[in-house]
Image (cartoon, rainbow, N blue to C red; front, top):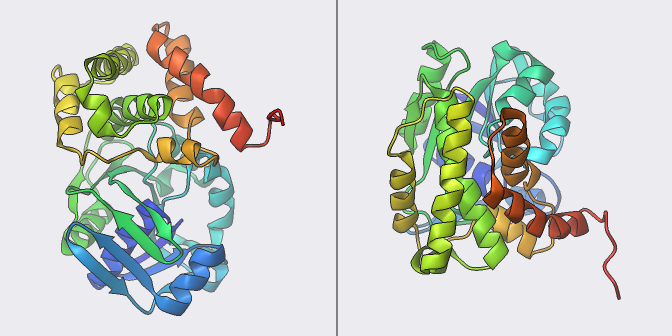
Length: 313
C-alpha cells in the first residue's frame, strides 16, 4: 500500500517507520534537520523491543516530489492541520483518503471541511513516542495502537486495506464503527493526563500514586464523560474506571506530548485538548471546573511559547 505520512515526529515517525519496515511503500513529509538526518542516515526507532533502522527513507519537505498515494496519515500537531490540508494536495489522487491521528475530537471535521468529507476517515492512535534527535524516534510504550473508521460508521474496502497494512506491521489496530465514541474515549484519557501532568510537571508514575492528583485525574475524566453524554456520544458506563486502569499500566516515566511541549517552551495542543473541553462544555451547558482551572493555569505557558506575551527580564 502506498502511504504518505504527513509529519514525521513521534507519532508519524513511529507508525510510518513500522509500516515501512513491514514492507509498505511509505513516504514522509518532514522538514529541517530531521529530514536531513533521515535522508542521510535513515530513520532509527528505539524502544522496549530494541532498535531498528529504516534505510533508505523516502522523505521530502515538498509533497509534489512524492506524488499521489493511496492513504495519507496526518501526524502533525492540531494547530498545523489547516496548513497541512493546503499543502497535501499533490498527495491526493482520485481515491486517496486521509486519516488524522491527532488527539482531540475535531481533527476529522476540520479536514473534512477543507478536503471534502468523502476523503476523510477519522482516526486516533496511542503511543508514548517522541523525536529524540534528528532521525531518531524513541518510544517507551509497551502498547501502541491505531483505531480508525468511516465518518458514517459504515464498513469500507479502504479501511480494510489500511487495517491489513497495520496488522502486517504488528501494530494493534481496530476499525471502529463508532469512531466518534472512540475519539471521546481517547479524549477522556489523554486530556486529564496531559493537563494534570503539565500543571504538576510530574510524570504519570507520580501523578497516579499521589491520592490528591489521582483524584484530580478521576474528576477531570468524569467531567469529559458527562460532556460526551450531553453531546449524544454513547460511552461505556465503566469508561472512567477502565481509563484509570490504563493509566496504571503506563511506564512510570511517561509524560504526554502536551506536557513535554509546554515544559520545553514549545507551542502545544492546549487549545485542542483542554481548550476544546472548556469550549464544548460551555456550548453544551456542562460545567467543567477542573478543566477550566487547568486551562487557565497552563494558558500563560502556551501564550509565551507562541510569543504572544512578553516575559519580564
